[in-house]
Structure formats: structure tokens, C-alpha cells
Image (cartoon, rainbow, N blue to C red; front, top):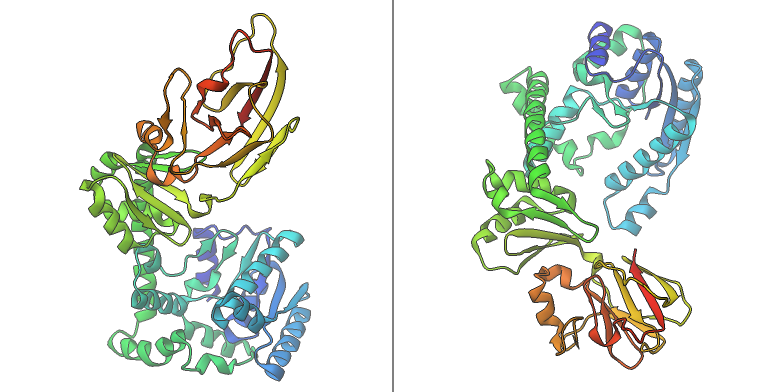
Length: 442
């Protein structure tokens, strides 16, 4: 078996011969084999064991077993005792999900603090088959069909080169002892039902099922790489990232092959599902203003672009800027002020991110707040009033970005600056101005 694992490690560049690994060892057959294989290959490693507090005396015995295993290989030993049920209840997730989150976060902390090059886990070909079928059952795209990758970030999986029967043969040949986890036979977990009830039927049809699905996963992974590069090329042309939002050019998206698939890959980091993405594509020919939401973001179909903003950017409440106060920081908004004496030849700063206001016309404290329906001001250069809602339409501000527009208001209720857009005519610097308050959006 070593003659298959060693080339697999080299082919996928899992780690170099001089690297030291952190090996996740539960005490079960798979992880016991992994530790022994790495030892025989001459790899230096530490052993990490998780005690999830779920199986009472059995879990205690597992911990003692793994501790002795680490001593056998003269490997540094790390153990953590988790309050898994408490964490699962707190987060409202399953015990399995809680255990997974806890262990991988802890593995990474140990890896980083102790200087290990990678974390090795004992996933093998059967795990790939189970993962692919489970993802397919729940519905998935290419990412779910490539199964378990040999390397993901700092995680490496050397045993993906071999099957479960190979592992059984290895422990018999090398007379290894391991611990059995009774929960692996519980039909409560979906993965166990696949393992115990579904996969045996499929193996009757194809005895080489695990290897076949492993090869399929490799081919799907290659196809996914092609798609990834195509999506990157599309993003380079169609996507524009600004501090307040992400913009996607609808016309360029419409020219792509498999538009819904490509758009879904672009929207995946923002939490949008494929079904919602299909609705977004359907909206391309509709009137502007259609709104779509994911758990974390909001997307608005504007005239010729999609505008994506974090939902947390919708703010409420007001904040005061006192006389002499130089900095005001609000979540997503950072203002800096400077009071200047006007001298001959003073040049009024230009740009949307700065406003130069007559300090003696302003009345303190100033208020910074989100704009409201009914707000009006006198845009600099105009003599008449302008509804702020009409002004934002004229500026072609997308619907979801309107929620993020702030105004700077004098204590007498007059809007002095629509922040990031235009100061008010009534507060502009004139030949009679003696002091200027410069307000910059940082």
C-alpha cells in the first residue's frame, strides 16, 4: 500500500519530505493506519486527538489509547476536551456539525502555534464516494461532486489513494490495534445510512465503486478547474469592487456561456443559492429595482448592472459631531474634520469625498444620520430646493445603496452636505468666509 500512497503524496504535492505534520487521530482504524503509514514513510508528526464529551467512558478510553499510540511513535501529543453539546445548542446546529467546527478550528490553532506544515486526516476513497452521494442527495454543483480533495489549504489527505479494504488488509498485515466507535453504526446519521444501506447495494452492481467514484471525482475536479478559470476571466471583465458595493455588468454576463452557472459562481461568496441566481438572470430584462436577498447580502437589479451590498450596511440612528471634534467613526463611515482660517488664495478642495463648509454659518452640534424621505437641500450651484430622493435618482444611485447615504445636518435642521455627493449652497465658502470646516470621508 505504501507504494501507492508515496507517489500520490508526490503527485498532489501534499507535503515535502522535510515537513512536519499534525495528524488527526481518533483511535479508529483509518487514523491508526494513517499514523503508521506516515511513520513508515519517515514523516515527522505530532498527534492531535479530540475528546467531544459525547460517549462517556468510551471516549475516555479512546483518549488513553491515542495517548499511548503517540508514545509508541515518539510523537508530540495534543488533546482537547470539548463541550460539544453546549456549543451545538448555543449555535442551533447538529452535534456532528458542532464537532466538525470545533475540531478543525482547534487543529488549525495547534498547527499554526506549533509550526506544523499541514494537518493530515485519514479520509480514503470510500469517504469520497459517501461525500459525493450525500451531496448529490441534497443537491449540489461541481463543488459537491468532486468529493474530497487531496489537499485543501493546510489540510492533506494521503489515504485518498487507497480503499477501505486496503486499510483492513494493512492492519491485518501489520497487526495493528484500533478502537471501534459504536456511533459509526448508528442509523441516526445520514452518512451512516448511506454507508450501511445504500452503498452496499451499489457495490453489488459495481464492486469497484469506490475507485470508480474516486476517478469520477478527479475528472469533475478537473472540469471545475476549467469553470473556475472561466469564471475568473468573466469576473475580471464584468465585476467591479468598490468599498460600498460589488457591481456586475449585466450586458457582459449575458454574453457568457451558461450564464446562470457562471453568475452563481460569482454570487457564491455572497451566499446566494442557485435557485435565486436563476431568478436574478430572469430579471435581466425586467424594470430596474428588483431586489434579492441572501442571509448576508442584498442584490438589486439596476439599469445595466447588479449591485450587491452587505445587509449589515443598512443603518439606523443619528450621531453628533461636536465643535472641535476631529474624528467621527460609525460602522461603515469614517469622517475627519479640520478647521482652517481662510487666507488669501485659499483653494476650496474638490471631490465627492470632501466638503468645505463655512464654519460660521454652521450651527453645532452637527448631526450625521441616514437620509430620510422628505429631506431636501440646495445642491451647491443651484438656487432652488431639491428633494433628496429626486437628487439620488438623478445621481443614478442604485436602490440598495440609497440605504447607505448619510447627511451632515446643521443644528438648525439644514442639510449641509449629502455625504459623498454634494454640499449645500447655503454653506459654501464665499469671499466673506473667515473660517472653513473641511470634512473628509476617509
